[in-house]
Image 1 (cartoon, rainbow, N blue to C red):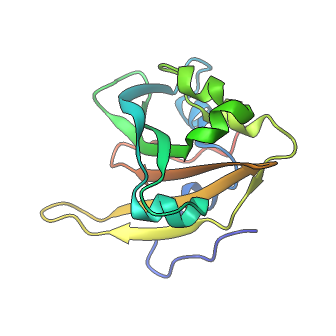
Image 2 (cartoon, rainbow, N blue to C red):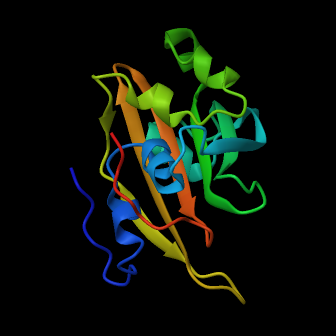
Length: 168
């Protein structure tokens, strides 16, 4: 299911916002090199789900999740293109999601999207005004494979490269 176009989304950002697949291959194409993007891990670990995560994943309030926050960047690590947070219930570690806890500096998109039975919920697109800065666009969705669910939140940052197609 494709997201509806947000009435105020800039035309240059719309292909990124509506991309049904992972940002990884589209960023690889935009950077023009197979070794990019890379993920710089900001933080990760086990913790209580945020309210939005709990609702999206169908968890009780305050349930425990494994979460990971990263910045995806190209050749210049000081100019990230995407800030992303992913989370899933701790019980999903025993249901096949253990590899997501060991990704290090690699984006998780390739791992998640290589499964044929992966399904994505409708993508929610939002804009967040930031005081003193331009608007920040964000999308979020839930990825499902069998009983496993992963919540993904992605923020487009000012150094997002120009769209060059969605890759493979």
